[in-house]
Length: 412
Image (tube, rainbow, N blue to C red; front, side, top):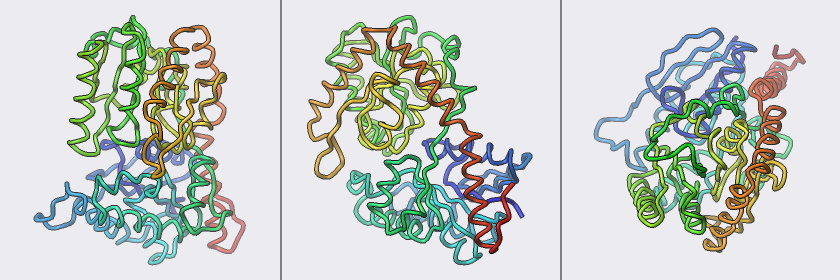
């Protein structure tokens, strides 16, 4: 039997978020240990050594608007059903994120497979989605997530902070929640990658210092706070916004317009689209500093990629950021107190000023910034290499499979 069946919404060629990056690298690293089956949304049909990938296409009738929030939630449920119509090949099923957690739950009930669920984020920690999606779809996504997590034989939290969030919001025994970090490919993301950076990326001058933002266009990533912070910095400092997929067209327009306004005010703002994966490494390695102004992060892959490239990080003190970024060690951690809803800084102006102060320190002392960046590189090499993370995940599979068989046979 295949060691595990992984369930994911995204897998190449359609990867747009941290969960998809995680699944892509984890599957490859696990496949080097034992055979892995992966089922995802899409048209994939891939057979590689140790890894079999099958995509599930849309199944709802054409009159359903799959671009609407209700349509996306119902589409996920329909594909979840298709994912488990055939018995999983794996001895264990491992589901990632709310889109496919119900498939994992149904595989546990229908095919009697132990369920591992990775909580890359939690719906209760993203209250802005209630306005973005509407109360009905948001309630449904939360229900899909919560019921599967509560039934899982093991929940993987990607940081200690994420584990605390799971225990606060999900009715689950603490011993069933395990911390296994996100990882980074330190061979792809490395300090020497900056030599490959091409000039004239939307006007970005690689020879001049620049602050780099990499992320999806979503309330969570806090781009507006970085844009506000840049108004407190010298106009000699450039800002490179490497924009990922937007949650909605309205959000994309909002952030793009805000970047345009900043460009008119001070110049030096580059808006870069279409880069992902290894193509980002030259930007990370050439940046003076990478900024993570998010209001919610479990264990940022962007931070890990920046640190692997030897670039210091400025980040808000939320979620798993303090487990990666330590002021005076690997970067600058900026105090961040959220409002009562947990959706935004309680003092947005103060947060922007504090971001600007930390960015100014990084830009004003390049030697210290390089030293902190080098320390970040050592951190990710020691704690966040994918083979290490795959080994820990495989050991968890082995424990659950052995418990299901009533034996102590190891997963090797």
